[in-house]
Amino acid sequence: MNLTIKSSGDDVKTIQEMLAEMGFQPGSVDGLYGGKTEVAVIKFQEEQGLYADGVVGPNTWNAIREALAIHRDEQISPAVDDSGHTLMDWQRVSADRYKGGYDRFFLREDVASAYMRVYEQVQQAGGLITSSGARRSLKAKMNSSRSATSFHYTGRALDLFVGSGMKKTRTDPFIISPDGDRLWRVYARAEGGTQMDLKAVTYDSRETGKIVTGRFIDLTSLFKEEGFERIRARSSFFKKGPWLGAEWWHFQYEHGLEKGLSTFGDELLKVYSESELRETPVWQYRHRVFGVNWF
Image (tube, rainbow, N blue to C red; front, side):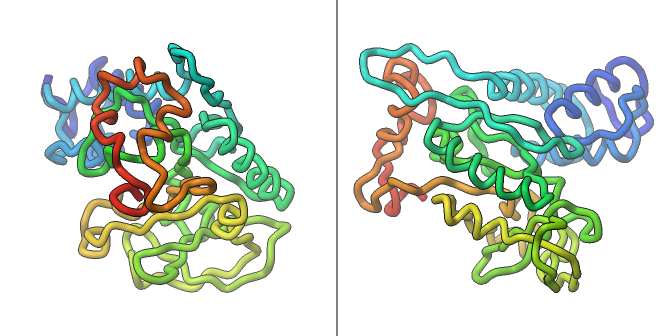
């Protein structure tokens, strides 16, 4: 298989269907390999750490198949072999469907409760909370864009839909504003919010941005009140690096973690049994300590 611009047929349609299911927005599922399909393939390749040439050869095809299987696994509640200790439940929570985003995802039970309090406030104000997912499969491959000790493995993190901000500042559900050293503040567009003039950046402008006026609520503050923290953008993002380095969409629940004491392994064992974890790639990092070598 070697699909590129102007290719057509059932193989192209299959690729489009698979990319669309994973939220990469390849355009119309029509079997015609056009510009939108090429952009979707490039974004997928960047995320997977592949050579991003927009061509679906054997390596990219195999990676798409594997990624889709993992993606489907992440959309259902995991079956856990309980070996004697009490595990926290994974709970399915709601999100607002927006373009290629999802309308539900799974979080650890205490994190799910905190998230739903944020979600309800945003809904009451007339805003949206979108989703690119939350729970990361233990089978997921690690690469430069996926941390080996991600909070996603522990049920403590969620991603807003990457296509719902930093794209079209007039209509995006979220406005992304610079807020210090590689940090962003995320504002949700909402009729019940406060009238504001915000500096909005996009994947193209990155740092310069422009002023956007409207009614918004400070989503970053709402998340923080419930124990969620943001993370910094990668420095490479500001040097014309991959768009995935923006990281504005990521919020992780840090409530209850003790710096210098809590470990990645302890948090994994709250949602998985050791027998489930023992043969997985993430288990080798179980001794990482929060605030020391796990962030």
